[in-house]
Length: 408
Image 1 (cartoon, rainbow, N blue to C red):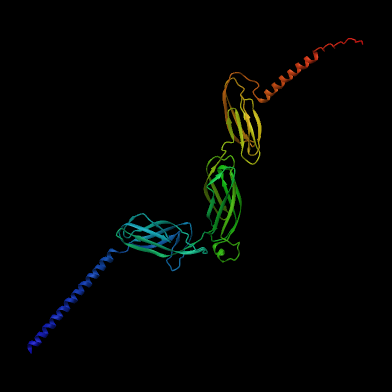
Image 2 (image 1 turned 45 degrees about the vertical axis):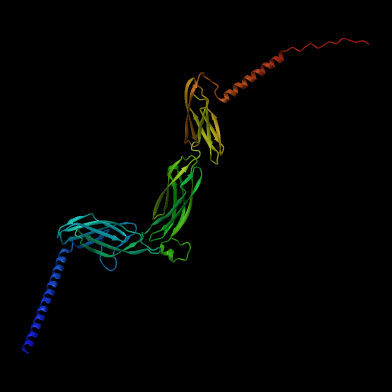
């Protein structure tokens, strides 16, 4: 009996001993976990405590509703003021607005010191077609080389459409245009602004060719009115066509076409490159002693020709019919080697071309032009006729034949 109770006591004592050991193990584990958490917490201490964030000079307040509004398409300036809570290397501040992200370059901080960093971020256009404003996610994070990341700002930011803004949706034009012909320019614009755009005008021009055309474009309402109005005239998008004429004397090459849409509140421009080809790049052609004037236009064209000595023609006006040409012969009036410049001007005094004629003549000719030659020929004919007339007048008539009488 005694042995039984002794055995039972021994078992209970052994069980108690095991419980104590398990408790010790749990305590050790708990202490280890606490120490690990303490060490971890020590290692991930805050890099910085934010003192202030400003957007375009306005202090940003962290609330459930954004207190700052920015304009879509503009670049906003974000300034972050903070005090470092610990020493850290390769610190980077990152700002995100919608899908746009910017970062500072890496820098070092010392505990207890205050810093200011500036970031410039483009405000995106994230609007539905009928919205005038929207709210985008706005975040600012700071990180260091030891992979510590802290979120300084995680809130929203109100983004509005610009007050007055017109945007090109497309400018369609042929890439190759022939000189002397007109071509269409199709312009599609949209009102991306907060307000209506009234009395828009469009101008299309090619400055290098002196070509320009303007016309009234129309009115564009804001996107919200466009989506709610039953009036077909209330639209925020409009398409127009304008025609430009390339001059006949335009040379082959690439030219810049500029399209501008504007009113008193907004202006926007867009450039497009076109290629001009000319089948008749030269309107004045030299062929031997001939000067060929070409007129590929649909109207009569006048040219003023000024020829320097020693040629026979000094100043002459020539009119060329539409779609035809005129040939002028330039005859030298010189002895030996000669060189003469022929300047061709339009009727308004614009120089078209300068052509040089040169060669050699053995004798001096005073009758080089067709007019002089014709005059000499007529004089010779006159002299010949005069001689014939004198001969006829001075010639004696022949004696009449005498007939004798006849008797039967």
